[in-house]
Image (cartoon, rainbow, N blue to C red):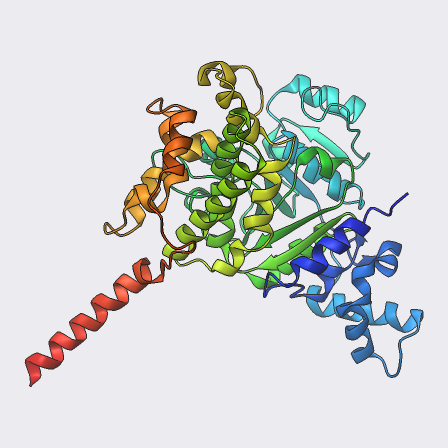
Length: 451
């Protein structure tokens, strides 16, 4: 039977050429079972034979033996972590992804408390170590417990993981904010654009919990069920606090769950939000029976729209070529577990939107995000943009969800768009470029007045 890390190693060997942030901190390439201790998987992991061996070689003289390697790894961990500490994590939200995150940490012996809403769910979980509704076939480790009492769940936590859907996050955070100790860092797994305010998760968190704590945003091709089952998964965590980003990567990383780091929070958030909308379009394409050629073309063009939006708000296009961009998009558009893809598929099959939304207990965040995204585009991007030409897929999905077009009509219109070069250069129309041109024009005006 294939080792669980083999497919992941092949994936990351290719992915490393896509991101300049590949393996930015040595500990992220190692499997860690408990804080401050190396797991045996760290020595077996194929990733530890790359930058890991080179780092150990620099620490010790000569070719490193196993003992020298272990000493080198321990020294490197202390250099990044300073001193060993015990993690105690509280997961905000008891849905599928919150359970998946608890599973990853619990398997490494890290105590985790799931903060749920219903006492019945708490009692069932604590008795059976499984949720009665979400991922109900997955048994979580003994060190994972559940609670619906915020004061007790939050009082001794060293880290928080936010796994509440974007549209419900603000109210949820506002209610528990007085109970969260100051300075506790938070890892956010939620994605999307809030309806009404057009705020992304970074904005919501800072507005509700304040700027005086570190935030990180985890994203990438990561279905909750596969994570909880222990299948190989690679994600990226974005944080403006480099030390915290590295700490999160080290805390989560193990033989089947690899975490890479970046500082591009905006890029990761855009990728995580837009990919859900593209997945709805891909599902509709499949539901209409348009074939693989059409779906592949649509997803590719959708990724270009995602990249254009990221460029326009100042995010790095390189980020969108990594796990949080095309990686997450491919998984969501082609994966059978994708709720957003399933929503689009059922729309393409002719079902009514209301019936689809009421038939499931899990949230397809692409629905609300698609409607907010078109307003975000109109408000945040320069008015010179021709939105219908530059973002036809994103606007087309929103029109379908609002009932203004049918899936078949929208797909037909996309195929009839004007012929142009494959990759349109948006740099001249970005917000930064526009501001720079205004600055130069103002400077030239001052020069002329002095002459």
